[in-house]
Image 1: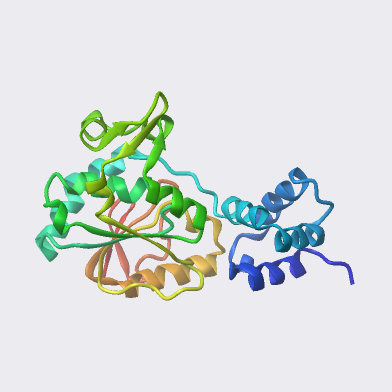
Image 2 (image 1 turned 60 degrees about the vertical axis):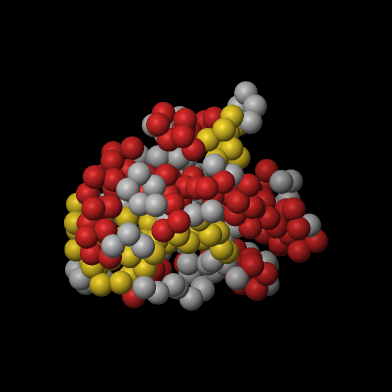
Length: 259
């Protein structure tokens, strides 16, 4: 029997613990086929064999699969709503010691953005954010805390001036005090155990790549991870269609309260 995409998915799961069945098939298959061709392989089988022999190729595949697009203060209006409405809500319910989870955090732009905004209202030693991703390379990048200028184009100048130091003509290093507020961990949203007692979960522009069944499962697990009245912050291209059925109600656009 010819080795096709179904066999490839099974082998990838055994090698990486990434379940491609949970991703929208047509979209993901097309992306992978593009990468296979670009890397000079003649099909899924030879590409998989290549990944088993070449750790760099394997890491490239995982990074490509997870679609690492991130930016500080991405979608500014949402962050303004976070600052003006969500932070006061969280503090009124839970006080100043908040447990925040930035899920699928990519290169760390998002959890660092949260820490910088929150630091205007809460002492830095009270801020602790868990930031997770499936990709080792982006986690290493995030921990290093050095960012190209293009990642900072939407960041208000007050944050840039206060929390970054220019490294050279194109790169900036984030303040170590902000770095200490964020703990980076490897985590697979589709496979690993979720955290508990979380007051805010931020997961933006990730589940749009999952099947509807996988997406609902992630939302149910987020619901269980959140404390009572906790908030889920999703991306600008997303909405939870079955919010009430999944245990949420819309607080405002892109923000959902656990009910």
